[in-house]
Image 1 (cartoon, one colour):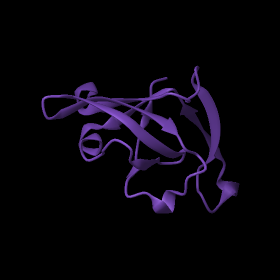
Image 2 (image 1 turned 120 degrees about the vertical axis):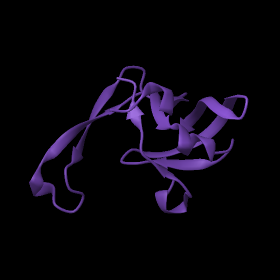
Image 3 (image 1 turned 60 degrees about the horizontal axis):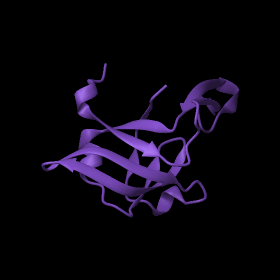
Image 4 (image 1 turned 180 degrees about the vertical axis):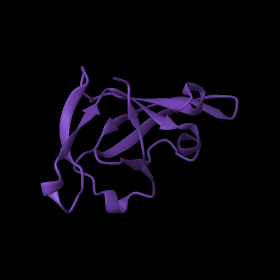
Amino acid sequence: AIEKGSLVELTLSDGPEKPTIKKENLHPKDPSMGTKDMYLAKKVYLRKEDAQVLSEGEEVTLMHWGNVIVEKITKKGDAVASMSGKLHLEGNPKNTKYKLNWHPDA
């Protein structure tokens, strides 16, 4: 289980208004293994440690979804409290420094 206090909310201005389901292959190179449901949402959570190293204007990759441009970072003291950004799905994950795991607010 992940503790809520160890997460930072990232709000995507152009993310889906309601959580939506995307089918994802269980294995990226072997579709015969089947699929799983992946939820996409306007609000997602990142690990606090990941959020701390990001900067405004930076493009990052949300694993298995696509790229996001971080537009605003709100801090409380030195800690990141929340973030906002926009999807940049046409961006190339190979060009981003950070590939982040995330959890939807669904």
